[in-house]
Image 1 (cartoon, rainbow, N blue to C red):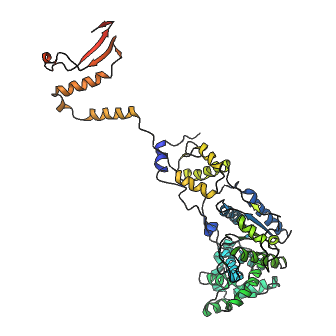
Image 2 (image 1 turned 120 degrees about the vertical axis):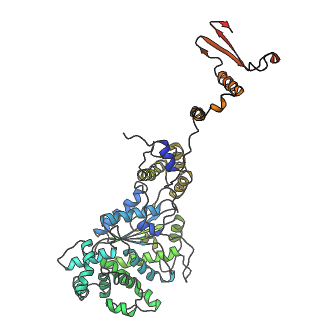
Image 3 (image 1 turned 180 degrees about the vertical axis):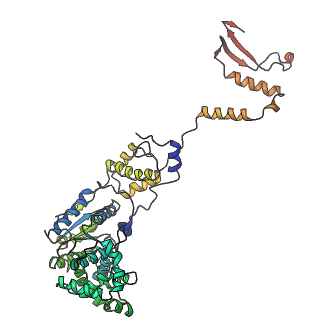
Length: 481
């Protein structure tokens, strides 16, 4: 068994570093790229429900489903969403779309098209975007090369330079394989995401419904979208549904709606949660009637008060919203607060990663915290956010009080190290030093001599003229001297 690190090593590192000194709020970008420990047992019932739903729609039972996480702010919902995304990315089992910023609530369909384009633009650890994964799957479907995603992403720009009509040929081949595609330009734009840096970003911009320069639009062979914002909104949902339909031929799709709380309203006076709830209803109904092969799962993360408002208020145009938001289960899935075991396990997980990075071995998994104190904290059912804040504010270790014997020894050695020749002629100083040293022997027996007392009260003073500065009262073999 390995020996724990010394206290001095732990003290030095702990008081210079704090693994909990990070923002307690997980941002939308952290969902994609954040790096923080995840206690997979925390709210595992919720993440397992998502994976089960994805598998069901993959089998077409049904082709679209939805579920709701009901969660207070700070209980770890973002950690949970990130866990789901990481799992889907690691095994490549589904495309992941994440919505947490909605822009102009009056143009929610147009905003969703941009959310879709931006989500598929996110890359994995190899720098490959979901757009590129989709494009490679489309190419491999109509060619015999059957290259891996990494191989085709690397080689496609060079091949494209030698074959200027490659995009045209591939687009035509894919349209033959997918006769139900309504807009051929969407297929062309997806293929352009395999191009180099002068092509792919502009293709993604077009897929988001944004205008290109005339020169760039002509280069890519894509028509510029209308500048009339109302027409963009009218066309956006249909374009998004076509992209979803194409992508679902290869993998299931998980669409996650987050951060629905807020007081923003659209021109009709509907709150953000109500507007996004209406979008979910539109997606659910449209996908249900569309040509979707591997299925779509819609996950909404909603605070309890917002959920109650959504299902209790009757809003014209989005009747039946509860059934669309949570079609898989009758009620939302509640995320749980931390308990004592969760607190111990989560803190241990964070500290284990920290100590490993520092090549240290603590005396126990929660050092420098006390397990009893952590368990007491867990009994209060803290949010994950408040727990991490508490750890940040209390991550320290105090130095132990100095060893008194060690201090005396060091002082003695320090005095011995000094040059003492200048003190040899100072009889008074020597006498006081001897007196002080002998007082420490009171009550001790040395060579059959019991030292009873040492006193500097010498009488009569006038007769010895200071020649005797102290005396020892002792008994030797019971004879007092």
